[in-house]
Amino acid sequence: LACHGYHPMRLWVPAMFLGLALVQAPAVARMARTRAGLRALLAVALGAGVTAGPLLWVQLTQPQSIRRWEMTRLWEADAPPLRILGAILGRYVPHFGPGFLWRTGDPYAATNPTATGPFGIVLLVAFVLGLLVLLPRLRTSASARTLVLLLAIYPVGDVISRYEGVHALRSAPGIVVWPWLAAVGLFGAPASWTASWRRVALACGVGLVLAAMARDGAVLARTVREGPNLPDYYHGFAMDLMQAVPDIRAAAAAGHDVYITTAGAQQPPFVLMVALDVAPHEWFFGPHEMRVEAFDEHLLVGRLHFLYGDHWRARLDSLRTNGVPDTLLLVVRPNELPTSAAARVIHAPDGRETLRIERVVW
Image 1 (cartoon, rainbow, N blue to C red):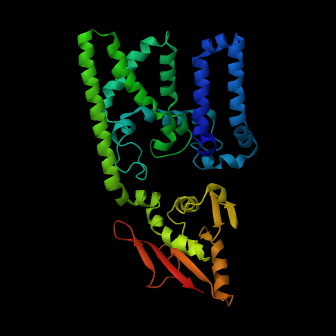
Image 2: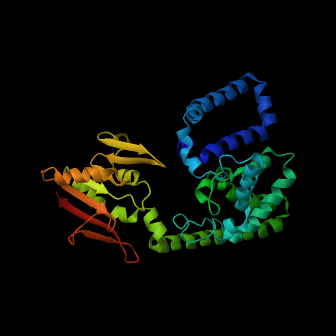
Image 3: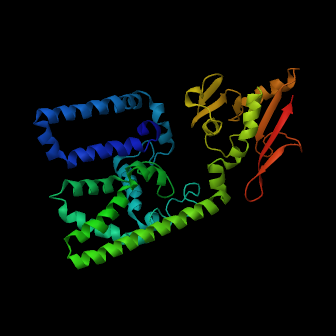
């Protein structure tokens, strides 16, 4: 299901399963030589075919299904293979650098308002210890090979798309491997030590974990305190639009059309379907118009009209001139449509007007 939604998953999940099959190849071969093992492998293949097969078919037969990736493609359409490989390596390496892991993280304020890396520097010792535990065991331990494989492929979802730095969300499917590596370092390394050194190591490990938890708690507190005051965060999470939900709900319940801005908002039709508690199977039950541009643009969902492009201007002009009183609710940016002094104004944290809400009769 995740692969049907977010395109980085279409890279990371196949890479993970292919890598696991290679790492565990001897065990897979042994399983295939027994009747029970062969049945298990066939069941896995059947499950993969049922779940991934339709998606693969769509991707091969419907080019528009990868349109979102093409919008952010890292290389030009006619780029030679060596240039593509160089560009991919240029995206891959920074995922392991201190800039992303500890210092500034993802540069986008909406997903990283505190401009900090996903891990505290205190875990560096645990990461190094984890590698020291795993590397000598690669030849003899399938578990060690598996963890190193997951570490190597963790950036895969973020290596074929443009971005100013490391994209935290595209890297998210694989980033969980870092805490696993830290756990191996903290609790795997001391296992071969003497009892006295194990007690010292355990105390140090507990201290590192507590320090990491304190750091993460401080980052969370800063996110809650500072995030809503940042424009990218405020608009990225539609905090202004959420304040208009009661007005939109009341107008739609009264049978009035609502005209809603899309400027500076990410997918407002879906945001509002959730905010209005509309069940997913009812989202497009009723009047619905959509067009495919850079994104799927839902122009009309029930009573809600979304101001993409200029298609809505003709509809509003017809309401003004049809000679019949029509009651509308406008939820627009300042100066996007004429509103009166009676409009309810929503302000951003810095005091600027961000939305104007007004019931009008034309």
